Length: 289
Length: 256
Image 1: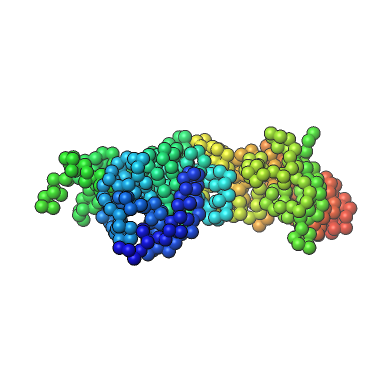
Image 2 (image 1 turned 180 degrees about the vertical axis):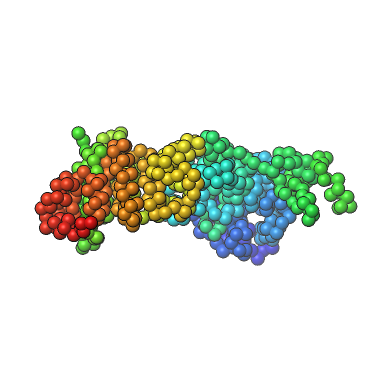
């Protein structure tokens, strides 16, 4: 396909985005404004992530796209097709084979390596947005490191629910300086933010890019007497039997039947391929046959 | 004895009009200064200039900081000024909605200043919030209610608790009893008087209610058209007013 420039965006735009990315990597957790472009998809479908991916892709890359952990849902399929068409890069479902992974709402279970880039789609990059509506004020709060308000939110959680009920988009402090919203990943994934891979966060509508360089210190905020806990459903995966992966709850009939399955489809398939079987794996295979 | 707050020649103009002009006074620790005057006389402008909400055009506001003694607040950097505003200073707004977070529970409102200065122990924060709600006579079981569920008088008391929880040394109050009915006013004044005495607070209180300054203020400044026309001990100014405007002001109050 030669009708498009490589990876859809023109070279000047990619250059502008790369500059923002470099700046974001130099100041971990800081939101860098960039001139977000119109993309051929609606806001909220990952326009920020797609632009960051487009600016990072090279022809040798192997791309993986995740939507809520899965490779085969609408958002993941259409973004993967988009780059197959406009960049002609190879794609994969395997976390370990991918060099660039664009994700929405999850970090892969398999630890990432130094050769990989993880790109997040971010709806609202500002961790203070729902606490302080004024952009002028939130910028000042970031500049002056006034983050007491984030704890007010956590205080309210405990006062109302007896525990920190924030379960996704859990605020973190990066390198002891900036408070960052890690995009709506479950708080189970927060410990994985300290990674060997480069992590880039793109918010298209809000026109912000922020980033975590490899081995960056990322601390989830909490209280001394209510420490942070990376929680997940208290079950094993019903397909692959994993007791350590993040689970989705699936309702299977109208009689209260339910199953828990890995949200990371690649992780689950790899484990099943290696012979690990969960509670319902046998029946599922019969269904398939 | 060094004054806690020393104001010299403070002037604020709105274009050609005067907000307040050439205001100077000293405020000593434990002292309560009342500022009275009619609407538009520059009381609130003066208070906002003192508290750093408005930038004055000229003059100096010297504050006796804990670390470095007297320093000009206007020459401080913004982080320093904001730090001061949430530790040693407090500001009580006339309308509690301006000073409270209406979407956050009473406990969270009181705890915010504690968390802003680094408190990270939920139990301690909650215990302190509980203690302060008790001190301003809000029932302990209301700690998780939002201020929207409170009456006007309770909201104002909550605002005071939220401001005093970090043990400030200087409180700015902008008509703290405005918009409250008389019996609630009386209780609030009683409470304020107790707290001021107990904590040894200094305060600058702006009001147009002479009864409020009579009860709370040690000293009084009377403002008219942006200028201070008379200043002195409260009783002296109210009982023996010298300036024509003060005489008018004092005689305007209905004797119940």
